[in-house]
Image 1 (cartoon, rainbow, N blue to C red):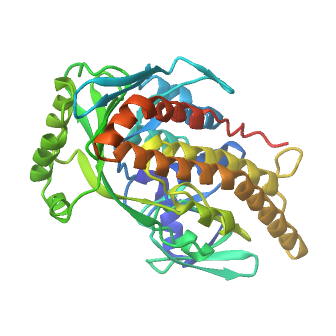
Image 2: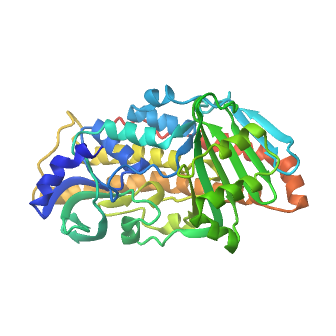
Image 3: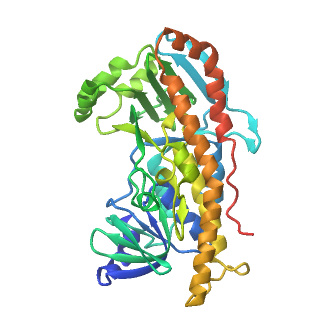
Length: 429
């Protein structure tokens, strides 16, 4: 991947101030998808990534119907479909009794057509997005340290001293976003919960059913989801004690501790964790943005905005973080395309003087349109995920009984309901 950025790096090395129309901070899902959306509309962007290569933290993500709508718009869906199995349904079971409490088929039709759910390996998604971008689009080892303004431009300061002048600045730089901070957002809050995520690779078929296999009880939420015939993504979320937090420094002890906490789950699912290499799982605290911040916060300001986790960090309880980021990217590319392109022919205009002001105002209007489209959708998903997580991890005999007998159908139904969303096409009116 790094070869794509060499030509641009060599230019900037001898030019401490460079200009770019659209600068995107962060080469994660939202950053690369936004860049690809713009590219498909004929707009070049520069993606700045602080790491020296694509980061695949998280291993995999459940990709719901709304995400496939976005991937179709970006032209990447078909290749990913060929590499991942379709999930047939959702099965929830009790970790306490080992009994199945609810099952729901995903073979259902929503408002926007048939539902489609897979568990996509993160590296294949990121590589697929990056490989469709023009050479030189991604600049690695480019850490953004601050943002300033100069007239109609944003000045993006990098750790190596480089300053980039941008007509548009898009922050896709995750939960610790520099751009979100510049826009006035607070740091995402800690939930008190932690998640361990991993991926097990088998030499032959793993035997896990192609379903969203979930296990609840005693304050712990876990799951196992096949990506393909030989790879299974798994996770555990819970509220750790101070002693349990110390285990994060020792992967071998942490793995043994996890195995002891799995409860009554099928042997083939327990084998997934047992077969996971020590470098194939991570532990991290769960963070989220208070949803009300989105109602009065600056999702965009002037010619800058945020998307993905920089906008709406959420808990993983409805599997919508990455899916929502893909939605953001399509909507943002479409709104920016309307602002930056002529209505006919798709040709760029030369902007100087008063025309520069006119372009800035159109960009501002485009980003305001994007912010308005994404504000309530993000609010809804953050709020729903937080409530679902609370109910799924709640402990106590009454809560375990109430969840298993009455809440499971409601919570499972929410997964499909929140994914029944179409972000639209990339076409510009």
